Image (cartoon, rainbow, N blue to C red):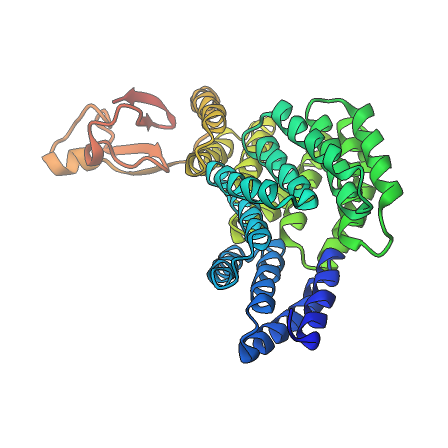
Length: 402
């Protein structure tokens, strides 16, 4: 970088970003960007856009983050700095993973892999493999591939002195082992992460608390889990890391569900859905909707459960998660049967429109009473016939299916 002042601003902002100081980093990066523009310092400008992309991604401003990454790519064309271009593509892959675009994320990763191997950037290549493992774990649900990429990343990074990067990989491979219920290996890598972690790295410390809380939850240690997650939540709220906050709300919702505290579980899951929608985490929103559906199903509120399963199905469709769509669809069909069997629907009673339209004293719907009750969400039969899955009711009981 040409200008020492601009370079110093970027370095300080980067340090703050690494430790979760998003609010403090923002003005530094904006100032660095303005200085770089004024001086035609394209390298500093490119780094400013890259870090602004990371910052906005981490606080859930997805569209703004993508705009900064695209600006970084345009500026890099003037520089022909391949290592920097590889980092931008890797960051875009992380963003695409967060929004559920997994195949596009893999394409960005492969672009980075070619570049990092060509320039011999071992540290960036390790970071890339860690990103690819996250895609296979969180998006494609292929844990074996995730562990494979994570192992490749560890081999590359073990010989370096980058303790922060080691911590990230240790933490993530522990998460991989949690997914296959191997808690001993998970705790082993969390402990390795704890040994390397700097006390000033608030973001990673918060993540470690979050992950440890989830292990405690998996092992049935609910109070310990709540304690870890609550501490993690306090830290993430300070740095306004919305994606992390949403994940914690989801975990707390699941814990309180297991503890039969339904109201707290509902509140936390709804909070998670709200933030995931706001941060455009479509897959995460789908998962939280599915979890809320499961909660209402346990409460025997089948109609509410079906609503959330349907929302989950539509969200899984957006991110093309075939397994998620099938799971949600199975649950929806289950709920439709239970709704009828348990009469879990709201209905209303109004004058029989069929009698009125025909000026008739008697029809097959109201049986001469001139009043018909229908499910609140369905409407009158003559509005939408034929409709194979539409259930109509008379006096609150199943009547006919068209």
